[in-house]
Image (cartoon, rainbow, N blue to C red; front, top):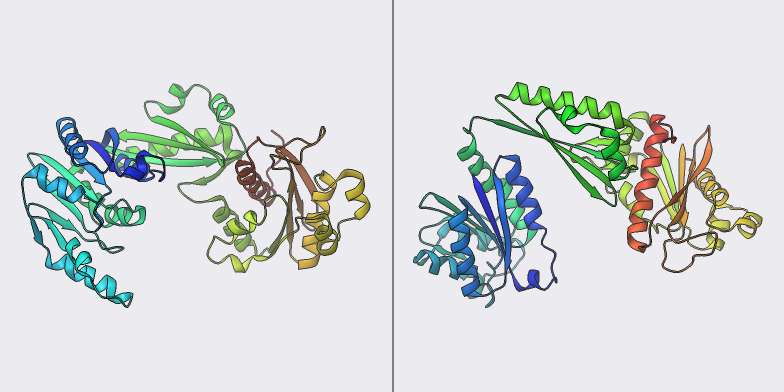
Length: 418
């Protein structure tokens, strides 16, 4: 089955809203062996939408449209669907009940404008919306499937998970092949280096596929296998994974969608260890990520943002002479910050960040992107130097990731040597 994705909205065309829906839908369809052959973005214009529907239906078996289902004048997707299929709108009793309940939970009454969202094309099956008011639309006609969903990401995702993917999975189930995917998440190694260390990919994969998906946090490896049965597919994935781990295992921190902070949280929790964090350049982002994990109160004791030198001295007992001699952005201060936060909090582990994120603050010896990360436990107190790029926000994210990865490696006894 081939799919064509259409995103509707002027805000997408002018860059006011980032189109994350296509990435999510494409990934979800790929997981059930549906190939996305093309994506497009059109504005809130009737002729443009109708032309795109005609093009899509000539090329694909599945057409998925997002956006333009709201109650206001510029939401014309539903009208375009009615015109394209030469049908009419009828009121769905179930959808009206959904809308009424949605507003009732919020102590509000359904207005006449809101009630119009219960109108659906006569030839369609409504897709119930548990997270908003606009229903989705499912139409099967001339051996094609048309799916229309709201552009609001969490509403769209809810419909995909609750209705669209299960229904499409039934349709595509008997295609004769079992497709399995595996994500291995790496950090601390550039994409080019990772590629080189994996060696001959044909020999490694034996007919499977691999994709390198880089970001400021690291590189995800997506491995895809196609086999005649479930057992063969799982065995082949496991075999490839073990080969990859043999080559670059130290950089792999998770399998699947697990985050680095979740991985660290499990280790700390399992070992009964506690941690505190002292941040300067990252401004609390390390603490934020650690506490994104439910149950983090079991191991996270406190976090302090000591942005100024005075704060470092007052709250962490960093030595004033050290600050005067080598500056706040230094190996020595990073170590003293980690040691200080551990001492003041009474935790097993203390970590710290200090750096120059830019675009200002650099000197001849200390460029933008220079960051030191400190680590202290009952056996060792150390720090590591990092050189990131020129962008302030990216540097902040990279420094946060590096701090968490340094913590993971210390906990697992993985050497920092390349």
